[in-house]
Figure (cartoon, rainbow, N blue to C red):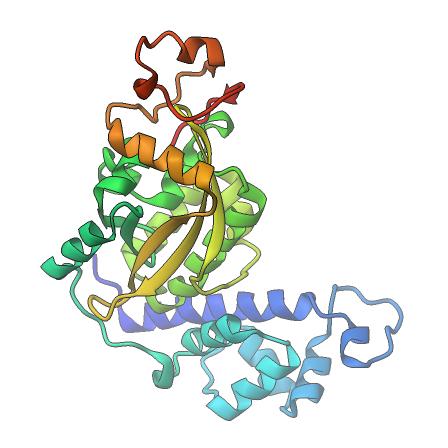
Length: 318
């Protein structure tokens, strides 16, 4: 299937219109020093208020927010971004949706350089992997596979972190701090999506995941955007319990839109548990829908074969 240029442009304009409306609606008149006024039919600022504060024509801004095919300079978009209080990621997202060449990156192939796997292997015992901007898992080391064994065994669309997390039953989701982590991941995907508006691989992925997960659809509809960065992630593994990891994202020069993500244990307990999983590759991360207790762990006759954990662990699969 070939997407004609005018179709991609139209879709990009639709995304631009929706993004501008979502950012306008989150700012109150009081935020920008305007009186609240009476009988406001929509939340946030009115279009004419944005136009006035940005120093642009009301008709021109209305057309821009309606997705009409009009041109916008960097200077004008800068004024709109300041008015809407966009952060760096949101500003970049705005430029890309407006199709400004100054912020576009050249396309490149999907193949990873062979040295990348060598780097991942040298990072062991730190778990490390490579994602693209759609959260497809492209490569990993043994330490990563030890913790996320059921994930790396997947193939096709299921070897995608977003798909895996959002389509698992709630009891099986590996991410403990879901309220913090999942919206951030969706916002990162939304920012990357601006480079691929109209591309079947991206639009199809978003459509399928929206249909499969109402949580994803709700977060996607907010139009929030963010950049990849360092964050604290808390995982729950059925064999050892909680593992706290600081994730660090490092962009690769080629192919574009790929990054190495390195997970550093945040405490000694997490380091021990990750190390135990690496030493026992047979420890399954599939959800047994059972509780693992201290007594059941003692059923192994050798102490070295028991995970470094005590008390009761609520099982959650990766």
